Each structure stands twice: as C-alpha cells, then as structure tokens.
Length: 433
Image (cartoon, rainbow, N blue to C red):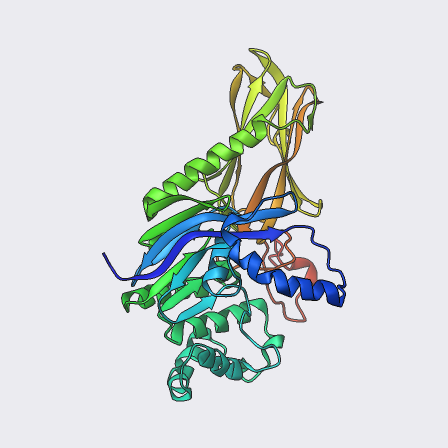
C-alpha cells in the first residue's frame, strides 16, 4: 500500500435551490450568527426538504501518492463539486476530506487569476499562493511561458486573453510550480488538439515524478491512457472504484441502460404509435456506446423501435438536432437518401451514421420522429442530450472550440491574383485557354 495523500470519508454537499436573496434586519443577522454553531454541530444529521438538493452523498475514496486517478460520470454527477471541496473552494455539508500536500488546481478557466494583472504577474501570484518563494518561481518562469506558448502576450493583462489562452497559461502554471497534488477539471477541452496532447504528456511526467494527479474528463480515451485507477460517480454517489478499464466498462454499461429506461417510460410523445422509439444509443463507428462526442468524430445514433404489426411499409425516420435554446441546427432524414423502409419484424434498430460530427462543443438536444406513410407515428422531443467536446474536425491539428456553438462545414480556401477571374475561383472546371 502506498502513502495516502487524499482521504475522503462520507462526503456530502447539499445546495439550496431557488433561494431568494433578500435584505435582512439586524435582529435576523444576530440570530443567524448565534445559531451558526448549532447548524455546524448538526451537519451529520441534515434534514432533506423540497428546497434542497444533494450534489454529493456518502462519497468515500482514497488516493495514494504518485497515482493518476480519473473521476468520471455524467453531467451533474458531482465530479466538479468533489474537486471544489478538495481545493477548499467550498465546504462540505457533511463528512470530511483530508489532503496531505501542496495542491495545484485547474478547475475553471481563469480560476485564481486576477484579470487586471498581466500573465507574468499572475504567474508570480499563483506561485506565491502555492507557498513558493520568488526565487523558485523565477527559476520556473521561462519553462512556464515556453510551455504555454504565450511569450508574446505574457505582459498583457489576462482579461484580454481568449479562453484558450487562459487555459494554456493556467495549466502551465498549475503543472510547473511543483504542487504535490495536481487537480485538473475538464478545462483542457478548451485547448486545441496539439495542446491537449501536450498537457496529457505533462501530467504523465508529473505522475512519474512521484506527484499525484486527480483528473476529471469526459474524454474516456484520455482517462484510459493516463489513469491507473478511476472512480465513477453517479447521481452524487460512488458507483464504482477500481482499475480504469473496470470502471469504464461499468460506466458504459450504465449509460446504455439509463438511455433505454428513459425512452421506455416517456409519456410526452405523440403519434399513432404504429412504430415507436423504445431506446436511443450514442455509439462510435465501431458500434461501441459512448457518453459524449468529439467534433469531427464518426458517430452512430441507433434507435431501437417496436412495431404494433408483423410487417409495416412506408416507414421513414428523422433525427433533429437542436440547441438547448430550441434552435434547429440540422436534420438527418432517411427518405431523402433512400425509399421508405419496410419493417418485417416487431422490433429492430434504425441506425443513422454521421461521419465527422459537425457540431461545436456544447450540449444539444436530439428529437426523434418516425412516420408511417407520411403520417406521424411517434415524436419525442429531447429524446437524448448529447455532450460535444472539442475535436479536430478539419484535420488541421486545431480544435473547434467556439463557445457560441454552431455547425462546422467542409470548405476550401485559395488566394487569387488580381488579374485572375473570380468566377473561376474554386471551380472544378477551369478554362484551358
């Protein structure tokens, strides 16, 4: 057994939802201060009510020195809450978290940076916060700037940095100022593909040096290649702890099961019901279930159907992709590519393959529509929520990370001299004269 550097026991975090911010008089303020010790004493026996939600409940695990541990789970599972408690950004409602060593955290883009200070000044500020002396920071300064590739902007106030520049500098500072424990959230998805690989390599170097890494990511391939162990959080509780492969398998199995359960119980649907969607699965091009998609990745959406009849003709299927603000982005319509289907079994799958998934990073809603002889048979809005991560859509080594979302499209560029006719630019047929 190695030396334990992170110990979490019975950790719980409760938030009040819909809490109104109001002005208080002096009597209420004094009463609040007077009862505060009683509230802290009663942390272990907090009563639930409709105005509270538990982000974490009874979470326990240990991390040994030199381990690289992945923390995985769906959005809202409590991963970031665990990291914020470990980083002392927020206090737990119950339980305890012990850390033995100096912690460097990279939780959100720009966390710990002062926007009015330059990149240079923030490097020294962060080093001081980590307890390092000025001479130590100075010795690492050139290495940090070189890694971040921001030498040209190091004396620019960081409030003028893009999100990608923030990430570059923040990771370089967190990884190079020699914390004994490095805590990294999903922020690496902001950087381009080359920088992400560079960061993963640096985390491996950190671990080889005997330091500890706790890594949260939806990029399961990165978790698998980097981490020796993993922890799977589900609905605020620990669902699985063990080897990375074991935990990833448990996660993928659970993700598939949850998707099927959600559709089979949906009542907010309409149509004749002759053919209905029972489950929807997000898969990679090998047919393996995946929890999220990278921009530019080949993706399959498989929809399990159930039919009232042994044989049904004239069937078509449509998958609509919407923003979470209900803006339609694009459609995949079966009968635009081929004649309507004839189903000869009561159950089966519609499989739509989308090469080079075109959406930029963000969350998107999927709508499923089935028609029989042009009449609606089944329609389910928000049948699936897709998380999209930054990916190399254009094969240029650069990730598409536009925070406004949108769709990537294949296109080409060229430069013409002024005397060349514009009509011929990009044309497949050029004049031979």
